[in-house]
View 1 (tube, rainbow, N blue to C red):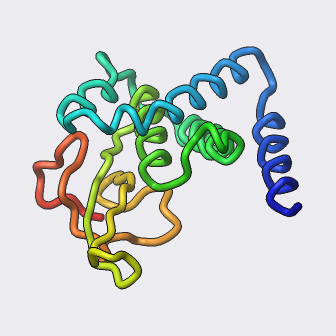
View 2 (spheres, helix red, strand yellow):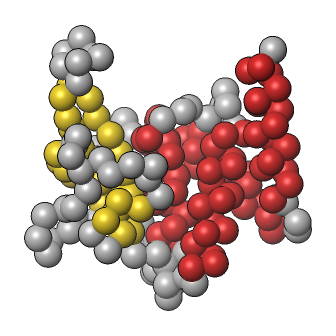
Length: 161
């Protein structure tokens, strides 16, 4: 019963963000992109990077615009289950797609680490990097994961996680 009530609460929270038709369209767009992530990630990573990057990035967003995008994406991801898969991959790719289209200077980093919980001993993680630091992450993945790939690849030094 608590699973049902938590789903209802997350859907209500997403709907509470909608104040205009543009907000409703943004929410639907976010759900469509997030639902497509598993299929999208079957493509080669350079092709995925090309598809996620805006053709002409707009000037950088204000902090308020970035915060608004993050709130909408995170609310949509929570409300979109079971259509939208859980996990860092869906979260990272969806946030990256919308933040880059708003002009944010972020990278999407993919890393690998060891895990005692997994049968093969490896675990992967996907996270955003802004100005060399983890962005919108509940913890610093750097000590646990070695960066293996990033969109766009950061050439000034190593990709900091």
